[in-house]
Image (cartoon, rainbow, N blue to C red; front, top):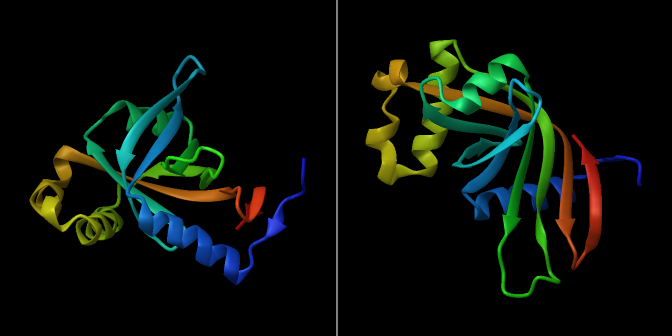
Length: 153
């Protein structure tokens, strides 16, 4: 196992490029019984911070309110499985209870998904949860360049 590397500007550029190229991730939270539960969700990012909107009191939000640790995968799906590229992340998530911060997360999502702006209306905040994830560890998978590099932001 390699020690975590410091993030270089080039590595951050590659991570952000992968985030721009993919708008769906798998979010894994911890159930009350300790078992992991994965969900595929759309997301927006502001730098390395991720935002997700979900129906009010969905299982992801309930799990995060109890245990903030999450894992995320964002993977490029291509025909050649030997050229895997993507991100594996471990971080801390929170359900944004502050309306101003939740609106900011919604604005990031509305900018990324303009076709869904009506579904992400800040006036409907009472009906949805906005989740923010701050990665602590990022593994950049790019088998063409450096297999399994682990980056700590």
